[in-house]
Image 1 (cartoon, rainbow, N blue to C red):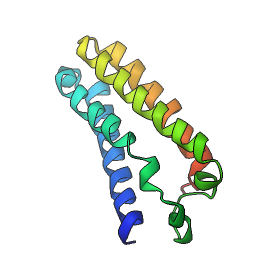
Image 2: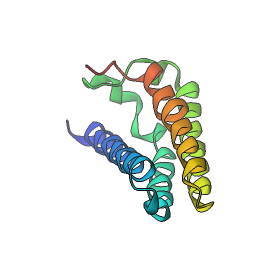
Image 3: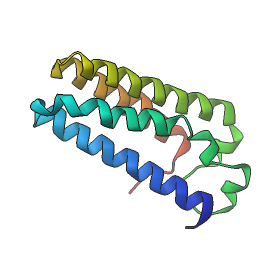
Image 4: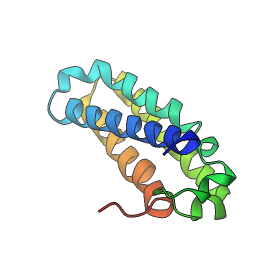
Length: 126
């Protein structure tokens, strides 16, 4: 992939890596709670730009994006905003210092944010 498709693929991979780091911190290394906010903030910041990563001509290239990204652009933008908001809630939860509260916020981000968007707007991953 090149251009906007390559950019969004790298951005989405970066968010997935932040999620992987968050999972380790929250499930295996709770002393890393102080670092959770940085990962969540990176996801929130990237989520703000998700709709712009999918220009109208972006559906002409073979990628994991479904046509619904462009056909339901308002819903797609709302899903990106939901991801941003949930990532911000995780940032806030991490600031509490309570790993259990942060883990619950992480789970919501995974299910309702990332997962919620993937169900409608991304091809199933094998």
